[in-house]
Amino acid sequence: MQVVFKVQRYQPERDGQPYFQSFPLELPERATVLDGLHQIKDERDGSLSFRRSCRSAICGSCAMYINGAYHLACNTGVETLKAQEIVVSPLPHLRVIKDLIVDMQPFFEKFERALPYLMTTTPPPERERLQSPEQRRAFEEMINCIQCAACYSACPMVWTDPQYLGPAALTKVYRFVSDSRDEVGRQRLALVDNDHGVWRCHTIFNCHIACPKNINPTWSIQQLKRKTIARRLRFWERG
Ligand code: FES
Image (cartoon, rainbow, N blue to C red; front, side, top):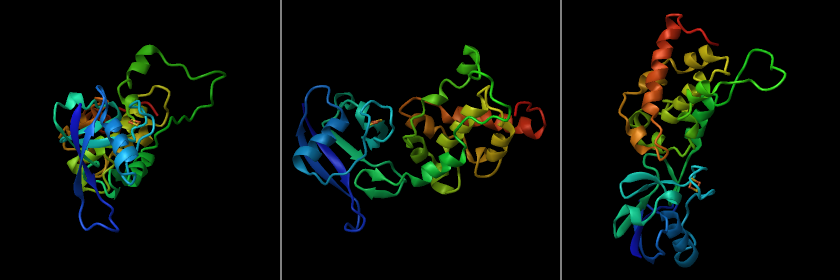
């Protein structure tokens, strides 16, 4: 298959502006966009920089903006894009460190602020904390998040409010608020009940469109808003 990869290049300390560089490629059938980038790096220009690790849509490191949409480069078949020209850019609205590598620090700092781990206040049982299949299903969708930051990059509220926790971190809060084993729900809801938390979300749904795992953070945030109000009215029981 013959395609042209048009890749955004940028080295801030050297280049005045980002620019696109074209690479005509011959790729095998079923090659992914990541395969194409590897071919460029291995055979044409070793200085091309991009993140990747698992090559299995699990680690989230290869999220990019490809032909006008958010994708994981490792599970996006070139053929499926149905285009002769594959335009590859870094995640928009995040600071570019080099070429396709963006600064993920603010994203992960906010993720950390969301306390993304199970917390309990009661002594641990002799064995594990049990959960029924139904209780487990309550957060089924949210655990598929691979922290690729596509939703974060796509959210206009993130662009305009640097303090906003953002869709991924808020989805993580909802994941633990929904977990029957977690015992600090009130603390979690208090954390997001402010102008930089759930109330900053304007239900734009960009995050849902961008998510390569088809998670719907907008829905999770709306559920959090409901629970936040329940907490204020003292209807929230757990934690
Ligand atoms: S390389 Fe891990 S998600 Fe693509």
